[in-house]
Length: 448
Figure 1 (cartoon, rainbow, N blue to C red):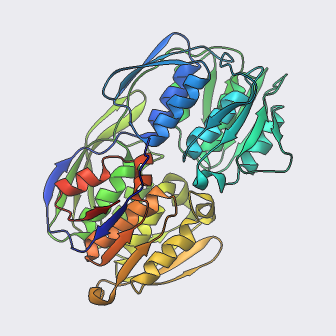
Figure 2 (cartoon, one colour):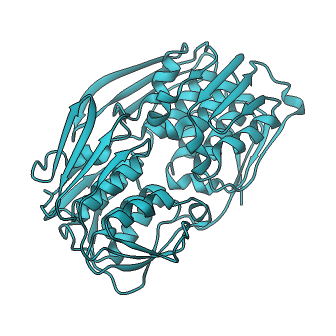
Figure 3 (cartoon, rainbow, N blue to C red):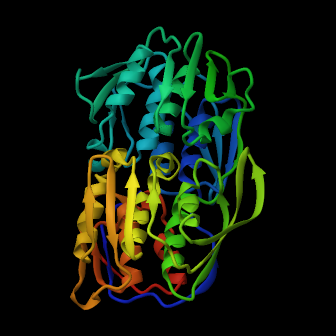
């Protein structure tokens, strides 16, 4: 876990580069591997785990709930599954989810229908700001209780359902809420049905789809997921690919760096995770996927990126669900691309680690970029050339790893004097970020 706080200072523009890199492992798959492995039968094996703060928070919480987890070697783990409904806690056990909304929502999904659970739920200062109202309402349908009543932010007390019964849920854009319902349904009586009009991230379904006794997925116009409760899950054997969200920042760097190119190896290319790349391809980005294969029901391959002349971005609402985490860096690309870019259907960005719409507007304003926001859209008036001598970028402590990384790209591309506070928050998702940046030739200072 990250203990010491530090800032990153940038004063020089990065020089052209042609390199090949490996980015950090996928956070979403790493967290789900531990959670699902813990409620599966027998011993699960997970290779190439992301060893970041969010994943360490996951391991710590599961060990408190009686799960044995052994690290075999760097990034490789055994998880000794306890089976569905078998996690256990002392009364008022304290669980801290750190910065991870994924861990919070999925763990609460599991525990809501696990017998005899009374736990105190908490997170870091950033997670405490994020409303859990939708999750609480859903888990209440299964019969779980949350105290105090009508409070929707951590800390909270949760008492699991005594007689959980499956529910019907019409899913929205949140894969975390969908996964929470799916996991809660596994230990509920009867069938839990989830319908989707727009398919969100599906790592959870892919990880357990071979368990025909527990889950069935139908695609007849609308997507229907049926979870048959009180069955069992087979043990996992997972090789975690590289994280496409982490790869997005390096992709942006290349696209905006003259005479540069990059190969990013072994990246997860799940169709529900590549909206960022699809948006940019539509606007002139030279991006290729190669060495494609499928492992553990997950598509993966290499991404090859070349410096490109981009058109202003027009991202309709349909793209949001498959590129949620990448919108801050898309805003940076839009700011440095001449013309007016428009992003629609983005209201949920207000309930991330920070309000990513308003905070990115503040940062872009510092470099002289005009933007206009409504509740559900953002218009950015991009420029190709900036008067760097007069620009200073200051990013306060927002507790938001994606804004820290996006601001870093903005600073290193423009060469503007940049100070990003509390950069250690990047360790929640991409602990190798600065090391890889140095390997590409980025110059910066770390100030503790």
